[in-house]
Length: 345
Image (tube, rainbow, N blue to C red; front, side, top):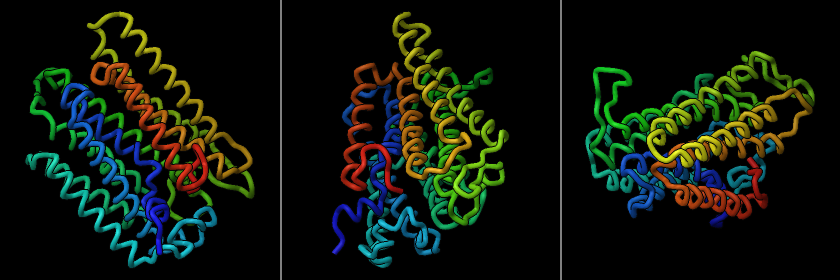
């Protein structure tokens, strides 16, 4: 009989903080602050989205044969027979039903929220069923994950306003929401196009990364200048909206908060670009070190956006939420994979 550990491995629950953070940031911008009891509901929405969506991805990838022969996943519950395909589908689709009902209830059934929910659901299903077969797979999953932020935002506010002059959005909340959405979209594109394809580079599946000149040759990773420049350019483009958010939200506040937040964001940005270099430099291939660096990259990128939203989170809120993400991630990895940072995926 499958254990709780088997099911949580199937759901890849260790990376739930990524989607939880996206949802919470949308709600925080909409509500205007982090210290609101409704944030707890949005944490649950993010958790359900991640576990139901990644669980479905695990099941459908296995059913299509992509993960059956992957030596890096031989210890996963489907591969070792701890959960049958039939039971996995029952469990995953039951969780998906919970996600749909709970999320729509929390959203208040607002028309724009329901439209965004439909959009992210369709994009997520497309990725889970055909993602491994197409080179453009970063697009549907980026749409799905990114839509979580506007879904939470529009479910918690009515303050979105247009203007006929640049930057075309009248109030600060609208401007920050747009910038945060752009940030998350580029973040997910990088996560799938660069990190995801690099993790699975040993497998025979559609990969744009290989088209960019990043591939394995024997025991070594070959990384073309074109591929490395594209990856770093994506990360730089990813970080620019965060710096604009800091400028817009803190320029009229006290100077110390402005400079401190700018320095914190700069620190995370330097670390992010350094980890990008570690991931993509030509070297002897090591799957475990690569997945560790990928995990660090995802965590740092989320933290950078949280820091940029200091006006909404406050410094105490930033510390509390980042600690929540770290503790969840480390404890989940220890429970699921017997590691602290590197997930065994």
